[in-house]
Length: 122
Image (cartoon, rainbow, N blue to C red):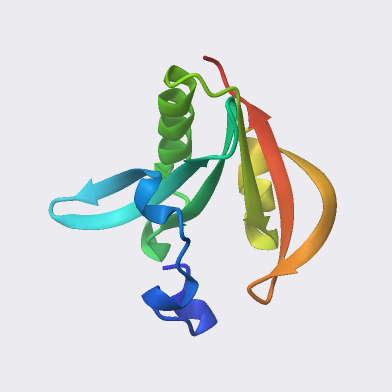
């Protein structure tokens, strides 16, 4: 869902830490319709990445439920802060969930991005 619009195959943009990351998925029967991953980057913080919802399900609240589920899970694991690299098109979504932009905008995988973060409850 994230790579195909960029013309990348699944193997083209692999994260070396993906296998060790927390994966949350939304299922409709046997089909994955959304996902979000989290990787620790320090003793009390980590990064949300690879957030994706099937296009026809965007706007349904599914993305919000996945992010909130991730926050509860990582808060329960002792993490205090979640950071992320938001595509410009997703900045508003994360802002509505309480994420705040920091640092200068930049281009990643050919798309404008902004770093964002949010404190979560332990």
